Image (cartoon, rainbow, N blue to C red):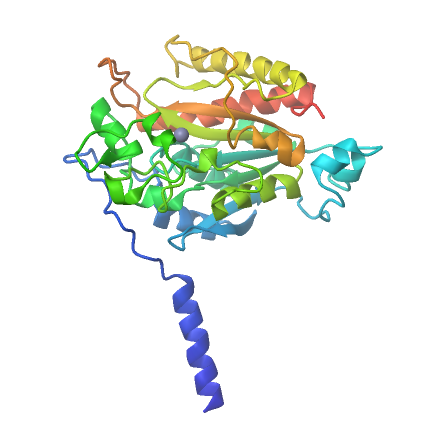
Length: 375
Ligand SMILES: [Zn+2]
């Protein structure tokens, strides 16, 4: 009897492990949206399946979202060393930074590619899932090899978080190709009860977004209305997702974070914030110039310049420095939708997920000449 009870309990635990809470809002539907191609694996169930299929990397669930979805991190390379004996803040102020760096391999810098912080932005989720496949099997989901990428990646330790905001992704469209600006905005930052757009900056007037006031919250925040990219107040980090990403960077002494986002313009790296150290601003400037040039050279950006000023933004990208002494840069990808002024650029699905690969190739090549983090 005892054994039967124990088996039932085990079965219940197993069932509960995959039992997700029902989202409060329905997925944002776009009528007549062009079906996504098979390699564009951006739904939470597809991200989970891709992570579970990994054979040559280590897979870890670093957090659970409020709806109970796993946030995965996939590791490629040797991640066997013990945890740091001190944190970066203390280690940086001690007699030697080696106290923090410990036994981490000195000939391998650690790169984190973080995707899907805003669940409504699928392009880097698609890139991350394809990158996991490439690193794991030697081919992406289109069956393409990329010896240049793999040769560079082998000189590093790579961590990929394919979708930090699984809750937001769950209620977001598969993509925004050819969609009007208003549809992209409504599905991203949501609409108030009267149907008006909350807007990009409007969404940042609340933390969390007051869900009882919205018609639809969009997939930008998590299911509790929190914008993970801005969940960075010391001592008051509200989400398990943001906390886990900070812990991940600190634990593995991340040297470089590429934080993948998307917007209504052709891709570019965002120049660093003034909150970065002077040395990191200079290093980030160099990398931004090189990567943005590569976007132009590869036809991924027709020459439209992103903002080259140093803003005063504080977000999850900047926290790289606080957590591990590493350098963080944000990639803005293109949604393939119309801008507010009615401009559009024709990009295939392959092109929409290409920028992360191009950016990381440039960054990895450059990092072999000169360390990515200035510690
Ligand atoms: Zn974003």
